[in-house]
Amino acid sequence: MTTIATMRALDETRGAVRVEDLYDTDIGDLWQACTTPERLARWIARVDGDMRVGGTIRTVFTSSWTGPARIEVCDAPHHLLLTTEPGTDDEGQIEAWLTEEGSKTRLVVEERGLPMRHLPFHASGWRVHLEDLGRSLEVDGPVHPEGWSSDAGAPGWKERWEELTPTYQQMEID
Image (cartoon, rainbow, N blue to C red; front, side):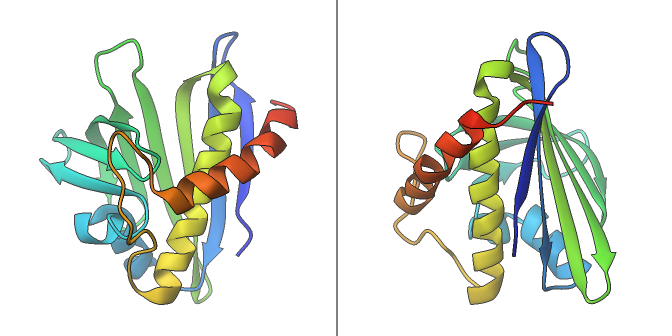
């Protein structure tokens, strides 16, 4: 597993983070890991709400980010698009694409609409999320048994994020 994260400017004030990795599982299994509340809670977030296109979900990420997201596209098992914090100044998008590569599946996630100064923090964060996904698939279970909340992220997630962030703070933004 080699998670790749990149950052790019969308305009003078907003940017995007893109992460990807190749997982040793079939596309159906990876889709379930990325879209079902029970599987999401193993590696990235607790999710509840209206789990259909046009519906709004509530999330509490292992990073402690908490907020609403509207499901814009859910094209199983290949494409998912969410609008985070819809209708606010902080509105953004998280988009995921899954593609089969032989017996493995590539996941690409892009988060758009981020303030430029936040890109390194989100790049390192998404890299940790995708690493956690890989570990969750390997152990077929949760990777943060100590839990997390909107007030405090998962300790293991936070430790890895703090380790990676300086690298992304030094990287160029395309």
